[in-house]
Image 1 (tube, helix red, strand yellow):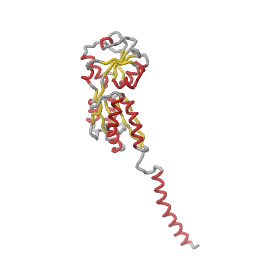
Image 2 (cartoon, one colour; image 1 turned 120 degrees about the vertical axis):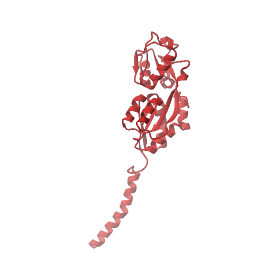
Image 3 (cartoon, helix red, strand yellow; image 1 turned 90 degrees about the vertical axis):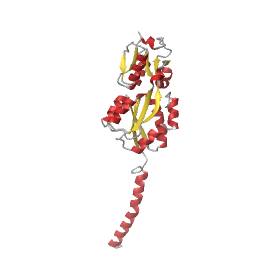
Image 4 (cartoon, rainbow, N blue to C red; image 1 turned 45 degrees about the horizontal axis):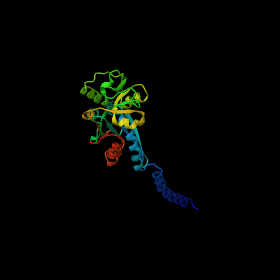
Length: 256
């Protein structure tokens, strides 16, 4: 075979192989549209229901992994305001969400998607005999710090009931407050009703009359620093869908 004919044969073979290689790359995940990571920054009290929702969301979005950063709404809002990475923000009050809005990092509509109410949580069987807020006097009890949503709500409820008893510690978020009681470090704590649902038999619950007058409201939106704005919006839509509302209701949240 002549050198020219060999060259033409090699060129023809190469032209056939290149399209196949390109297709193979997409099929193997090299350039396909599926997949990716979604980062959601959310209030600590959303931990259990959000992790449950993530399972369904990932099942509906092949190759997508939802990762979370749970904590104080105030801290999370300040972090995204400073440019911390994330696709979606969910806070347990409007004040924290306003921090993100004022910083100009909110891109989507801010959705009010759930509410919560404060309760007293005690060790199983309530061995300290705490039946009301009045019984916190002389007891070892804890609540959230003043600057976080669950702390602001606790202050309002305590003031409305003229309670002057002081907690033994102020915690960074509602889950840290719950952990103090579950771990036996406190007789009681002021947490959300949803936290007692999540804790199950690890705690006993005492309702606070009138606490529903100071509901905690949850807000969510997409962020400017999102690496996939469409996927971020799909998460917000999923949380506010009938599927999301059903999961929130089962977790003990009330729905706006």
